[in-house]
Image (cartoon, rainbow, N blue to C red; front, side):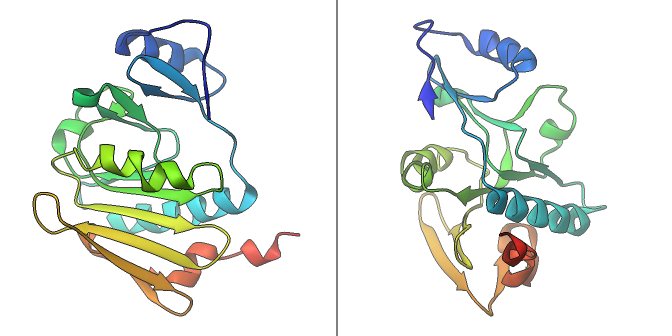
Length: 190
């Protein structure tokens, strides 16, 4: 990710207007625009596989799964992030015509070499400030490994690690499937 150097500060409203017409995505960090890098084939496959599983699982529940292009706004921190996947079950998000959600229940990031430290560190710390966030998931793209962090109390996050042969579980939305489903067709990449 690189910071845009053309201007020192953008308001949230200016950022949203820029994003509506921009050919590239930017995250918003307290007035600064940060261009997002493209994703690898493996990253796109994992995200797509999980997105289709979540859409089918959530059908008829009132919850909505967003993949890749939906921003999560953290107004108290002056941030907008693009998680790889986010699930909201909050009526305020469903009934809003905004280009972002405020009340995710589940956020999922597919790790890449360039973003892993940020996804584990500052980004996770920022996401923890969302009162209704129940679960944060990190999915490795180079190996079958999924790390789930479930909120147990105000700021106690309990990790659960899944690997080859396991059945993953996202408790926040009562979802489970074999971990292999997330990585289906990756072995066909050359």
